[in-house]
Every structure is written in structure tokens, then in C-alpha cells.
Amino acid sequence: MTDDFLPNPALLPAGLRDLLPPDAEIEARSIEAMMDCFAGHGYQRVRPPLVEFEHNLLAGSGAAVSEQTFRLMDPDSQRMLGLRADTTPQVARIANTRLAQSPRPLRLSYAEHCLRVRGSQLAPDRQISQAGIELIGSDAVEADAEIVLAGAEALAVLGLTEVSFDLTLPTMAAMLLDSAGLPPDRRALLAHALDRKDAAAVTALGGSMAATLTRLLLAAGEATPALAALSEVDLPAEARVLADRLAAVVDAIRARAPALRLTVDPLEFRGIRYHTGPCVTVYALGHQQELGRGGRYISGEREPATGLTLFPDVILEAARAPALRPRLYLPAGTDAKLAARFRAEGYATVAALGDEVIDIAAEARRLLCSHLLTDGAAAPLS
Image 1 (tube, rainbow, N blue to C red):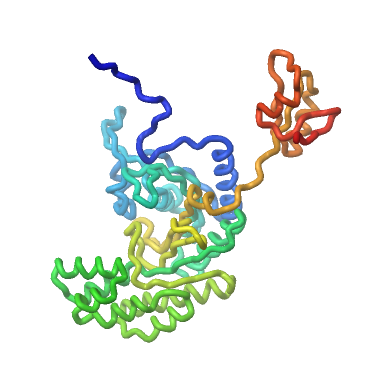
Image 2: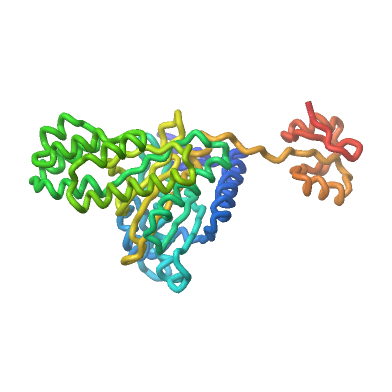
């Protein structure tokens, strides 16, 4: 006979976790600091629903996250629903429906949680937080620059100034592979070689495009030398337009933030596959995971758009934690107006409850307070 043990109630599905004090407060305050920065640049906040009808959620750019989307049946309408795996497609839907008549360019921001079917070895979490901006209705180079600059400012608010923005052209590789006219099996091998930055394999598999692809692999790194190398590569006309656009974006960024660290990789194509032009991935020096990513895409059927999504979960591992409210213990009988005054000054007040406390200072420490109300003043606890 075997005993059936109930699972530990703290056990959660793989890739999901509780966020406890003080981490939950740190995350919330950090997100609001970034959102306040975005608002200062004119981005207005929207809040899409967690769940939508599947055909709406996965339309347009949403198709790129179809494999990462949880699906369920709506018991009310008997229609399939999807839980968002990425917020950008939802913001694009809002822009093209509810805000279709709003003046362009449209600047929208969001701070939401997403749920994905699976994590990765590097990023195992399946529930992720996103804080981002979308600039919809402009194809200007300055729009691409603006999302980078706003993102850099939002990170700086959290003390992250040693960051790098890696600018890429995700459609460049596919464009050149199309030009090579390779059979499908060889094309797949070549794409894998490009993804691994394997110059020897690219030379062996690249056919008529081998020299061009190899030179592009080498045209990666710090923006100035990389763009100089990229300008000397003989590219098909359509690919040259992309390369020139990337150079113009770098110029627009440097005109406003010359010290911002920029790198270029014209053949990088990993990530969500709905981007159509220059893209960006954000890194903190000394940290392997991405702080954020974004780039140019088509919103709805034909509206040009660009955006940047930051990942607060990762950012908070690299950033300095914001100062938390000091916790002030209030002995029993403390005047309510006095308590309100300290809350207005930025304290979190923790009031005594119930039984008489013999050692007030010990009780304050037990409740993780940093200060004790003594003679009408907040006295620090050692």
C-alpha cells in the first residue's frame, strides 16, 4: 500500500515563480520609473487584456508568436482564446482599431505580463514582464532613433548607464539567401552557419553569395568601423537600401547621444520574426541576457511602426535596486494624524495591533522595521 502525498502548495509549474517582498515592490517601482520616463517622451499608456480571441491575437505580427501562445476554450462564447505571449501585437491591434482615427504618429506605452509555452535554457521563465513603447505611423529615421534614445534614458533612470544597443537588420540574411538561389536543404545549412557566425561554413555553402556573406559577417562590431565596412560591400539594390537605412539610424542616434554605445551586426536574425527593418537588442556590460529588444515592423496591414520592449525581470538583475520606503513602527495609541504625516513623508507605517508589547524596539525589528516612533520622531533602529 502506498500513501498519496499532496503536492507542496508552494510548488509551481516549471518557468513560473512567486515574487516576494521586497522584490515585488522593487519590480513595481522600477517599472513605474521607466513608464514615467516614457510618458515624459509623449508615450501614452494602454492596457490590453491578458486573453483575446485567438484569431485576433495571432493576426498580423502576432503570427510570429503563435508557437509560444497558450490556447483555451472560452466557456461563454465557445470560441478559442489565446493568452498573450507578447504585447506588441496587441498594441498594434489597438492602434489599428480603437485608435484608428487618432493623429499619427501614435506614441503608446505598456507594462504587462506575458505567458509563453516554453522558456529557454538562458531564460527559463515562462511568465515574463514587459515594459515598452510603440511609435506607430511614421517611417522616419528619427522614429527608429527615438525608441533607442527613450530606452537608454529609461535604463539610466534605474542606474544602468553601461549599456550597449546592438543594431541589426533581420531581413538582410533572408534577402541575400533568396538572391543566392540555393536549394532548400543547402539554404537551411547556410542559414544555420550564418546564425553560428561560422565564416568557413558560409564560404563553403554560400555559392555566388559566399564572398558577400563573408564580408558581412566581418562587418560587425562597434558601429563606426562596422558601418564603414558595410558601405564597401557590393549588395543588391534592395539590401543596399537596408544598409543605408541602418547607417542613417546610427547617425540620428549619435546626433543626440554621441556617447551611447552602439554596435552593428547586419546578419543577425534571431528573435521574434515580424520585424521588417532596423532592429535593436539591448545588453548591459557584463550580463549575458538581453535587457530588451525591438525594431521596425508593419502595424496592421500597412502602417509603418517601430518599438522597443524592455524586460524588467532581467533589468533588475543588472540595475541597482531603488530605495525602498523606510518602515516605521507605530506603538499602540499613536495619533492617526501623526501617522498620516509620516506616510506623506515617505515612510511605510506599521501599526501595533492587539496585545500590549513589552519590548517595542524588539517588536519593531521582528516586523522588519527600520525606524521606531519615539517622542513624535522617527528614530532609526540599530
